[in-house]
Image (cartoon, rainbow, N blue to C red; front, top):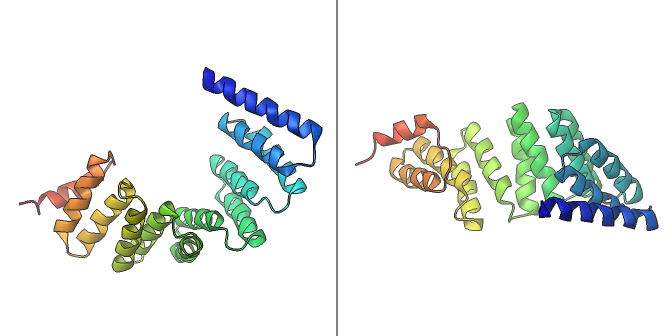
Length: 207
C-alpha cells in the first residue's frame, strides 16, 4: 500500500510541476513513466507525445512509446519508434538494443546483428544486448562469436543466468561438452529454466 501511495504522490508532484511549467518535457516524461508503472498506457502515451513536443531531444520517450507498442503486440510500431530515437540521437545504445530485439522477434537475424553490434559498440556495458547478440550469432552458426559475446556479458555480470545458458548451448555446439556442463549447472543454480532437451543431452557427457 505504501508503494502505491508513494507513486501517487510522485504523480501528483509531476502534475503540479506541469501545471506550473507546461513546456517542461522532463515533467511530462516523468509522469508518463509513473503512469506506465500503473499500467495506464493510454494516459502515459499522451504524456510521452507531450514530452517529445516540448523536448524533441528526449529520445527516451520514443523508447517508452516503443514499449507501449510491444505491450499491444505491435512490433512494427516498436521498431519505428526506436528507429526515430537513434535517428535523433546517433549512438543511442538502448534504441539500437531494442531495434535488435524486435528484429530477432521478426526473424530478421542479419538486421538484428547489425543493430546489436552498434548497441554494444556504443555501450560496452550493455549486458542484455551482448546476450541477445550472442543468440543472434548462434542462429547464424557463428559459434565462436556467440561464445565471445556471452563471455563479455559475464565480465559485466558473472551471475547473468541467460549468458550461462547461452554458453552451455554454444559450447555444446562447439564440441566442448565439459565447458557446456559447467555453464549449464551455473544457469540452473541461478534459477534459470534450462531447456529439458539440453539437460538430457548434457547428462550423457557427465562422468
